[in-house]
Image (cartoon, rainbow, N blue to C red):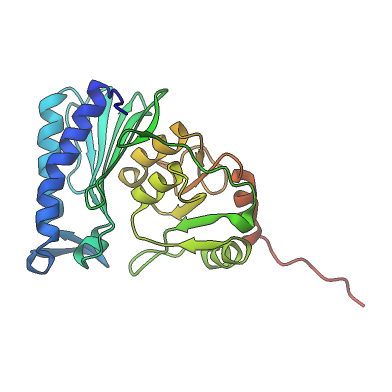
Length: 274
């Protein structure tokens, strides 16, 4: 089935697909990549930087009036722009550098503070996830819907675990312990963008993580909501893209997952003295 994509989505898709061609080439030669250290356990490859330059050039050519917020080069474009691109040229860099075929390109469009469109491209699996506000969410030409699972013991939940150089959220290990005990499984695959896309596709029933940046979650957020899901901060706050945490769920499990995570931060119940 052919699905019509808007001019805005097509701009994003062209930029992602052009960057993907060089990323796939470099992924095949991962051992020869020039790698520089940006921070503790946070590596930037030559491929990552080249992909961002490619995406930036394509987006600026198509929409010179848009601003930019990019993982490697930061903010750019006209200072008074009402719209901007939010870009992660390689989400899952650690996977990429270790030869693990689970990484993606993430591009979102923001207008007047609202995410209006998003593209997440997984070139290894030939999956292009895309969504536009009010138009639904898709993978390639297939319409996406979040899962319909209602019970925690049937739910498959994804998360992002802190690593060296990243602070552990105060109650994270307790949260992980509770979620593992109450659900059918927890997965940690190392790409927040794809985790969110998988919630939108009904592959995961929920996903939570702390300390993400806007380029990690912006495109995934609109995919989830356009697929009928919910996205918020872990504590229920309404700023998951620019806040301190992300919780994405299907339409049935938002409150049960939030309640489960909240229990991890509660003090143990007192027992009656005898």
